Length: 193
Ligand SMILES: C[S@@+](CC[C@H](N)C(=O)[O-])C[C@H]1O[C@@H](n2cnc3c(N)ncnc32)[C@H](O)[C@@H]1O
Image 1 (cartoon, rainbow, N blue to C red):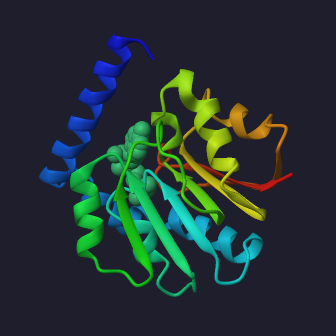
Image 2: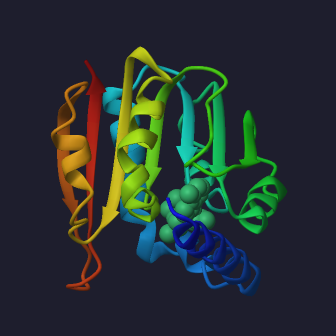
C-alpha cells in the first residue's frame, strides 16, 4: 500500500468508528440478517470440530458471537480495526469470548484456531493485501480447521482468493437469499489442505 492507500485506509477506519458510534450498524443484529449468521453457524456445526476455537476477522460488534450462544465453542476471538465496534462487542460480555482492536492487514495470530471466519469483511481488505492476509490466516488454522467466508451479493474480486487457493478445498457453497431480491449473500466453507 502506498501512502495514499494508507491514508484512505485510516480514513475508512475512522468512518467505521463513526458509523458504529451512530448506530448505523445496529441493523446487523436484526432479523433481516439472521439467515447469513445462521448459515455460518450451520457450517461450523457441520464441518467444524466439536467445541471449536474460533477467530472472527472483522467481527464488528460481536453479532455472530451473540448468535452462537446455542452452539458450544471453547474460545472465540473477534478482531476488528474499529475500536468502537470492539468496545460494543466487549460490552455484550459473551462467555469464553475476547474482542481485540486489530487491523487484519497487520495482525499476526498468537495461536491456532479450528475455525476462521471472514463474515462480510474480506472485501474490505485492500486488494494488494488480500492474498497475504488470507495466507497468514490459513497458517493460523489447525490441521483439520476450516475457513468460512460470507460475502454480500456477488463478491466480485474476492471469491477467486478462496476458490483458487492451492491450500484450500471447498467443502460447500450456498446462496443465502431473502424475500428482498437484492439482499442475498454467498457463503463458502473451505478445509485446509
Ligand atoms: C459489514 S461489517 C461486518 C461486521 C461483522 N462481521 C458482522 O457481520 O456482524 C465489516 C467489518 O469489517 C471491519 N473491517 C474492515 N476492514 C478491516 C480491517 N482491515 N481489519 C479489521 N477489521 C476490518 C469493519 O470495521 C466492520 O466492522
